[in-house]
Picture 1: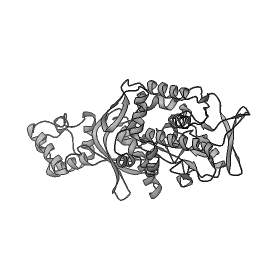
Picture 2 (picture 1 turned 180 degrees about the horizontal axis):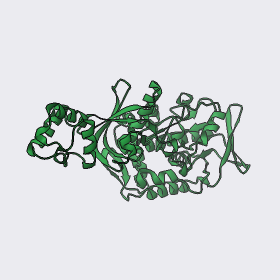
Picture 3 (picture 1 turned 90 degrees about the horizontal axis):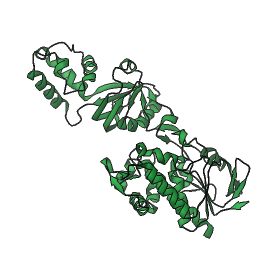
Picture 4 (picture 1 turned 120 degrees about the horizontal axis):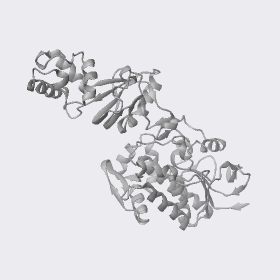
Length: 422
């Protein structure tokens, strides 16, 4: 029976970083993955370019991790976004900052990041087992004793780090394997749900496909409660699909849509699109009036071209109860007011999200009340550690989730290695 100081289960970003940290702190480390390749999810992150972290200041960074981001303060004391940047640059990966603080490799290739990280793991002497599914983690008398593989082989260790991810993007191997092992140790798993996921709408104009593929740039998308009050609003880009809404701001709103559904008990939730977030309603009305005054004899559906996306104009006019064929000088004050109102708050009734397997991030996971935030160690089972998406932590896309993965991975690896000295 083999013996290691630390066993890491899962070769994603958190597991790879945990392996590095544990080995750097003197532990003999075994990294086990059920797949044939390590770093599969890392390799497709950031659209295949690998958004390795985000440079925002700590408090702002945590504000972009709405799913229990405050739990990460202690982990960031050990390994934060600046440490992540220094780590990869130390591996020879030059990084560049893009919009909203996102950090990418200059190569624009996730493969360069994955290769450098795996190479670092190998240099540190970490033993790697791929194509090796774990059957279960072995617990005896309140302590970790090792793992048993699907083949029946037992490997002993006083420290096991579960870094198996959630249930999103299952093609990369994230199929929720770690949850039963956590439950076997006495942990509770909070409800799992999709976050950073496209939104479904059954509106007729969505189902007709008339706006399918239309992108809106720099707009504001808002989730409303049943009383019409704003729950959350995000500004940026979005796209209409054949089933609803997608794009960065739709993904960010998705978890709040679910919250409203759960609290209200209703399937249908109102969202709204502000097409001119820098202007108030009066300014929008004046802008449209000016456009109609320039060509008073032209049909308004034609006058509005250039001001609004052409494919969107018929729907906006319908919602404002305006005939697109009337000319500019025939638009009443009430009609103009109604149109301006729609441009500032175009309603979209939505009915849920796509499935967890289609989400970028898993919401829910191992209950954080049962985890020591300074060590990422279980409070219920000595020698059991967790890191990455298996935990009940989720953030927006833009380098926030991977920052949490690297940070919790490093913290878990460092403290798992310390066990051999105790």
